[in-house]
Amino acid sequence: MDFPLLKVFPASVFSKNFKGSLYYLPIGQGLGDTANGLGLYRALSKRFPDALHIVYKDPRWDILTDQIQGDRTILRNYVTDFDYRRSSQTKGAHRKEQFDKLKKNLTRELKTLDGNGYRVAGDMASPERLAKGRSVFEEMWNEMGLILEEKEQRPWIPIDQKDWDESTNFLIIHKLKDVPFIVIAPHTEPDKRWPTIRFSELGKKLYSITGARIVVMGFRESESPTIPDALYAFDLSLPIISAIIAQSRLFIGHDSGLTHIAASFDIPVIDIMANRTLPPFEVRPLTPYANIIIEPEMGKKGFISMETVLSVALELFKIGAIRNPPCPVCCRPMDYTRYADSYGLARACVCGLTVWNEWEKESPKFYRLNVGKVTTSESFPDPGKGEILELAENDNDEFFLENSLRDYGRANSTIQVLFKEKGGVRKTPLEQFDSPAHGDIVWSFDSVLFLFQQIDFYLSDVRILGPEKFLLTFSRDIFPGKSVRVPWCGKSVKLKNIHEYFSYYAWSAWCTPERWEYPIKMAEKKEDFKVAKNLSIQSWGYLKKARTISRIIRYSGKEFYASIRSLI
Ligand SMILES: [Zn+2]
Image (cartoon, rainbow, N blue to C red):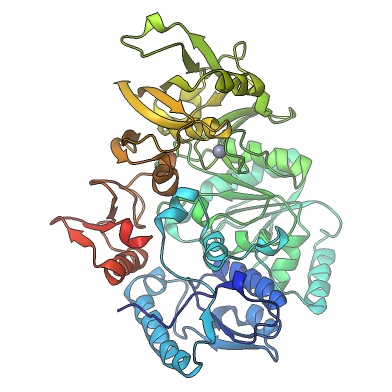
């Protein structure tokens, strides 16, 4: 039995004078979750000032959460006995036990409220979230029907004047006031960590090239990089640390708490996403000024090089906080960097599209897309009717302007496209771009679908011509009336219509079922998801939801499967 009384707050149906109780359940207990959770609390408490806000906190971060206590905000402890330096306690059975206890008590409490209490977010992974490339917190707003302004989407750290003053004193004492300095936060759990030796090298080079001093933040007892003239700022309180970060020229960290704190300020943030367990977009810092450096082979364990991090750091140090350009096909910001050197960087989007952008040149515009070398139909065996477009990859001379593609769509009821995946996005950018030039594009299957969706054409047929070579047919018909088999994650998946793809299968560029311990989208059978072999709390919750709602679940002898239908 799930917890039927723990309904998610339908924020969109209530007006400002909602007077019920809102329960902020923990969705983790890390510092990053707390910073993001405080951001969500700030947005909701402003929107619903008469509601009672009951926040479940982790006592480790009391110095932050204590600041929000008030007439309409009640703080409660979620856990009391975690040792955050031992990950065995913050993950797995211990955490589940604590959370189950909390939910049981809460269910009892909610019975007395007569339907006037809600939780502000669910804790179940949804397949749609993965397909949409949303972060955990974005999914929460979505679940509640909340529309938030950009600023409200950011993490939030309450800092009072006393802490600002202390941070200023600290900077004056260390001769860092009003001079640019760089914060490096090298400590996190082992599976998220970029090696200390590389941080040392990075710090040395940044200091010698920019002359800016490096401030190292983290735990005194953890191994720290050795950097000349660096300031090791340990043992300061979190609000003071936050205030120092706010005044830095550049922040460099991992997927860890301080990176999410940095995301609450308008400074450039480099997130070295060496995380081996989660899709990078799920936990990304929610700031428009982040450059998230991912492994060069998307969705695979790779190697984030010193050169990549250094090149991005030097550029951001120079230009400050600027927004990443939008993806030319799906319009989401291109927040991810797969590779960078002194010439430029390979930016990637959640949809898998990767664009080579030279430094100091404006990001390539939509009309620079290398789409559409028209190929004669004779060069294909049994090609179907009419001409076939090819998505050129490294050919700047031949491309369709956006309007040309639109015109082409107007003149034709179907469009056939030859799509060569060129090793897919699983190859490194250097392998994909032979000699990268400004504006070169590497297409992913998803990005091709997004491109044609822009001119209202939808995939209606796929013919596999060879390994990584497909003939795709697009038409205006959203429901082609027959199923289509699409290549997906090294397999093929049968779809009734393209909406199924965008709801459940998009994001294939990042998906490696072997790697992530989350409920993994891997279709064995139509509409089934394989859940990771080693059940994590999340995947267990996912299975439980499937079973509670429709009891559709199966076990193959090796792995669990949950039906998509049961999760809608
Ligand atoms: Zn995109």
